[in-house]
Length: 70
Image: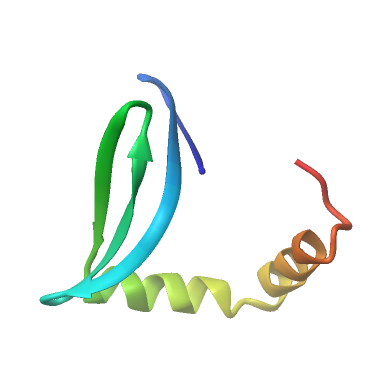
C-alpha cells in the first residue's frame, strides 16, 4: 500500500491482520520498521459503508479480475 501526503510517500507492506481489544490491527512494515495500524470500530463501520458503494464494488472487481493495472 502506498500512502501519499505533502510530507512524502510512504510504503506500507501488509503482512497480517488481527483483532486486539476494540481494534482491527493491520500488521506490516514501513521501510525498515515493523508497523501496526489500529482501526477503531467507527473506522471499520465507515470502511464497510464506503466499500459497499456500487461504483466502488465495480472498481474493486475490475482490479481483482485484472482489468485495471497499477
